[in-house]
Amino acid sequence: MRKMTRKNILHNLRVALNLSLDYALIAGFIYIHIHLIPGPFTYIFICWLIGIKQFSIGESLLHEASHGILFYPKRINNWANVLVAYPFFHTISHYRTGHSKHHKLLAQKEDPLLIRHKELAKKKSFYVEWFVKPFLGVQAYKKVIKVSEKLRQKNFKPVVIFWVSLVGFCLWMGWGVELFIYWVIPFFWCQTTLVHWSELTDHYMTEGHSRSVNSWIYNFLVAHNGGYHAAHHLRPNIPFYQLPTLQKNESEKITTDWTNGFWNTYWTIEKRHKANQK
Image: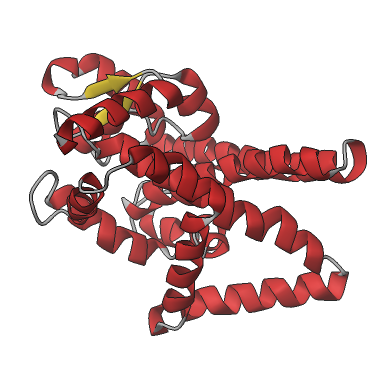
């Protein structure tokens, strides 16, 4: 067994702090809605805040775990399933399988993300894909179908056990409704929408192979530096907190489109999508 170094210990502490803060914020959002500002309109706002932090954990940090760099050593990284994967109806190994293929085949015709984007490019309205379908719950419905299919697979048995145990515990404690409205709905509606936008942002209609987001709000509050996407593709085994330095030091080697945030991304892609229709 490899000896833990001081660097690895500090890394684990840093990741644990980020992970704890993400979960603490979710708990805080729930507390605010239940005890301080209840109501249906407040719930929609809180739902999206929860979904953002679910994205931070169940997409950004799960992504780190899929590369084997969330925690050291790797056996601890794999134990992180219960924190970053199972609550989001996923497993680290399953995420790794699809994601590693994307890395190996980046911008090649066999890249699974590129295949989906080629189908999207044939559709007339990008506005419908970016706004209408997500907000009407079309992406959520697709996610429900996808999750139900995965849960029937043998390798998703740990996820089933986790959720049966969690639902049973919450029902026993009288928290069944809370679990549904403060976790399940934000996940299938909001977190799924954010993943959808993230995938489009990263690669759809780029002039190079990737798009990077120059926004501290996105990188710090939402995606754990996921906006430095081209830098990540250059060095996929670099932890998320080192990506800004990597981008700065290796900028000449990093080919990327830059965007400044949500609206700039949408209008950039919308313009290129329309031009592609001609």
